[in-house]
Amino acid sequence: MTKLIGEQQLMRIFIGEGDRHGQRPLYEALVELLRCEGVAGVTVVRGICGFGANRIFHTQKLLDLSADLPIIVEAVDSPEAISAVMPQIDAMMSGGMITLEKATVIRYSHKKP
Image 1 (tube, rainbow, N blue to C red):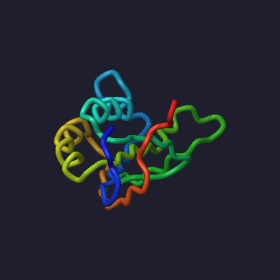
Image 2: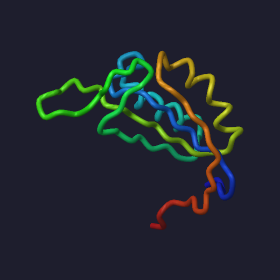
Image 3: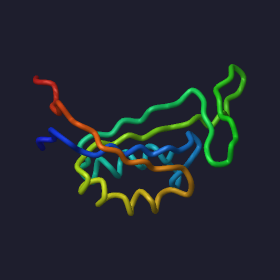
């Protein structure tokens, strides 16, 4: 396991639940790419409401099954690892937003058996 303590980089990818890459949801394709590229950790978060560049408000309503809710894919690794995978991520996306910020990792480990 890689030691990932100290100042690292947090990447957030903001997309919609309905965004696709080929036949798969884009968020699943992104997670698979990041896993295959050895990125230290990735989490997908589903938002309850939001809007993007098109200013269309997306929200989950009781009878609305096509809400296209916001999805955030978060990844943490070294700035070099994030930079290395960025061209592949960019090629997979047709919209959305990517942000980068410094993150201080104070613990990175798996559960002991």
